[in-house]
Length: 331
Image (tube, rainbow, N blue to C red; front, side, top):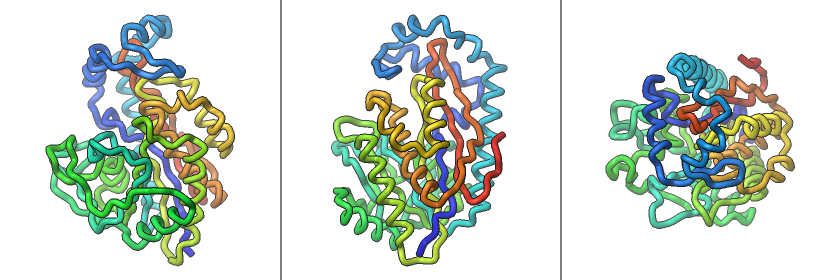
């Protein structure tokens, strides 16, 4: 039977490779954006969010000196995850991410498994997500097709994607969505093992799964991988962030404590209005959490870094974590 030897969860924000001097400029998009942003189960426009949080001291957290410190901590964390992935010596990886209207424009499937032969990455995708030259990686088609059959038997209706649609973010090319590109490029250093991308729509209503449904999916996925008739060493990786696009450190600390204790009931009890916008990506983390729990692996929280870019506390809570047979300790 296959063995899950590594579980990992990480953010994929472009902020991770954006020079610190540009963070405030990126924050101008929040300041001028008319869209509403979720915070504490409520939608706010930027002026109202700023009024609500103006006494919380975020102006001191967006100085160049402070941003540089947080940027540096994120770089060290990424290096730790690269090392953990390399040390695990995996044969194949299951990567959980979501599409942000990059390839699914007129449709919104809840669950998609890519079963095609090749995974494409490269320009004109942004360099935080792709190498400078066009690159072709291999999908693990045997595992992908096995997972489709297993999920169907467990009453998950899903889309079997045999070919990448054009990516509208990057001029119609067939590069993988950014959630997957970040893992392939920044963690696997453009040399991934055969990998299976699984796309879960956490972002766009009305077809997002509930947290209890995401937990059920994680249990079925873990069981399927472990019962796969193969000697391969498997990594399960979730590509997503904690709170964003408004940072909520209190909520993030609750998430981390629930992860550390494998508290699935606690995650399910959180109001679904918390799992909105980018924070919805926590629903991807539960599959990793369940895989780690089944294998008896402890959590290594490499670091949690709340990265701010405006006076209203917009940005992203960056959590870098993995579960493996040995615990490298926190930094």
